[in-house]
Length: 406
Image (cartoon, rainbow, N blue to C red; front, side):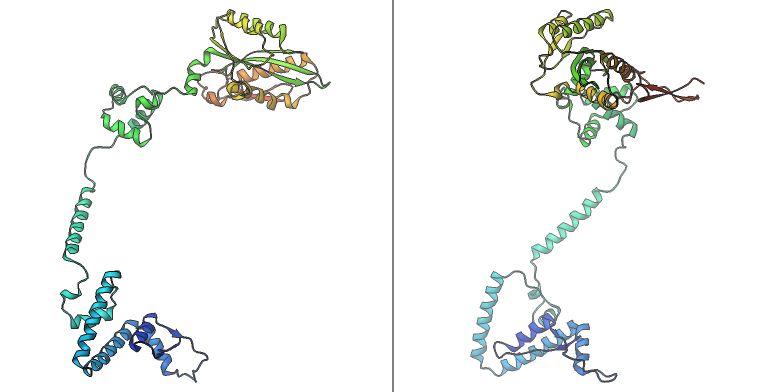
């Protein structure tokens, strides 16, 4: 709370300075507390009244100022009043041309409403009023159009899931082809509904989603592709052994492993012939073999597979991701088995790898196979009664769990 001060510096119109002071509601804080007992100074009470009713005080001040101006104008000659009127009109024109729309206060409207006609106080044009009316009409009928009526029934949830499944699993099927398949399954859906549903889930039409990706290509040709690679193991006596292994891309199954003291040369060619004979006896006819551009794979190694009708594919130089399935198996066998053992010799390494490969192919879940082992059943068996039995592998390093028959 504070005192109300209106100071006139002798320049300009005193009414304008007082008006600006009232507009800003400038209240100076008192320097000291002048209260004596329970009474308060008069100016302190006026300050409280003004802070509570600023519009009333502004109106009273504006009326007082108007009366003073009328008394001053009455005492001036007619020629001076006419000249001042012309100057004010010119200033008003300049103001309307340069400034934005004026902001009227309540006191201004009440005073001008007594002096001017109703038409002079309108700040909008008739076209603006008509535009407001048109906007109200449009808003009303737009709300009417958005009303929830019976309309077309929604597509059932089962049908929506079926449309999305058919579109994802069959990239060559268009809207009509999906619609025909749904008719055979007992769902009557229009092609437009199928198109709108696929658009909402950002599934492009058949020509755009029919492109063959590397994942689908490998899934389609995985059973016909074999991959091989080397990795090394250091024994407890600091002797380095080399392990050659072959892997089937589709099932991630390890087909063959061989340990040797040296890589490449005649030994690698002999291991290639051994695997080729095994594939021939099993009546398996793969089409491709992938291995690195390494001197460990001599020409005789490739010739042994070409004689069986396989095409040898070499990935780019220094591109381990091109043979990522083999790199993944090497990391698995190191992390789960070899990193926790001290290998004595080649015979010991052969026994450890044989037991781990049996565990890897027959029991270890694989993420890309929906947590099924590479050589396991296609459908996981249902849970039945019986005791859970643990079986250890690789000298107790790996555990396998199964349920006995009830």
